[in-house]
Length: 114
Length: 111
Image 1: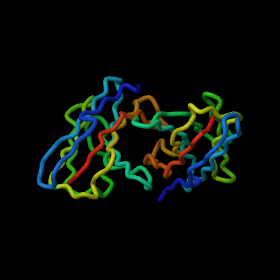
Image 2 (image 1 turned 90 degrees about the horizontal axis):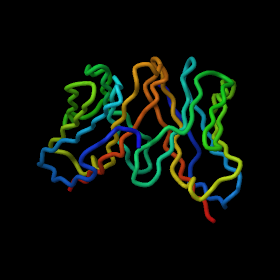
Image 3 (image 1 turned 30 degrees about the horizontal axis):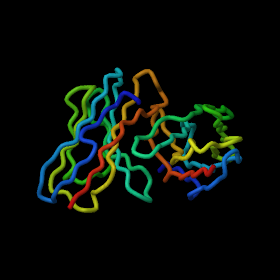
Image 4 (image 1 turned 180 degrees about the vertical axis):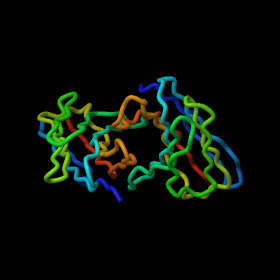
C-alpha cells in the first residue's frame, strides 16, 4: 500500500463513450504522473504534473486529456478511444524533497475498449 | 534519448536458487537508478535504488550496484523464495531525467 489510490479499478467502455479515471494521494507529494502499461511493451510515461502544472506530454493522442486541479488529485479524461488503448493505466506521485523522483504507484485501472 | 534495457523473461528458478536479472541503461550524466517490483493485480513498488556511481542499493535480500563504467544495474538475490515471484522493472530518473523504465522481467520461483 503506497498511499496512492485509483478509481475505478476496472473499466469497460465503447469507442464512443466518455469516461474519466481518478487518482488521489494525500502523501504531500507535488508531482503526479500517468503511465500506460501494455503487455510486452515498456511502461510508457504519458503526462507529468508538477505543482498542478503540466511539465510533460509524451506525444499522447488528444483523446486522452489530463486534469490536475490540485496537488492531491489527478484525472485522465477519455474520449473516443480505440481498442488499442486497452491497457493498465497507472498513476504515480513523487515527493518534493526527493531529487531522485522515486515513483509511488497506485494499483492501476484496467481499461478495456470494445 | 535515455533508455533502459533488461533481460527478457520469464526467468524460472527453484526456491533457494541464485537470481540475477541484468539491466543496462543509456543516458548522459548520472541518473538515479531503480528496481521496482510488481505483484499480480498491483501497481509497481520501489524495491531499491542507487543515486551515484558505485552505490549499492539493497532491500529484502535483493542487491544492485550502480556501475557507471558498464552502465549497468544488475539485480541479484542469493536465495529466492516462492513469494519473490513477480515482475521486476529497472528504471532511471531524477533531476532532468524523465522516468524511463525497462520492459520488465517476469520471475517465477517454484517450490
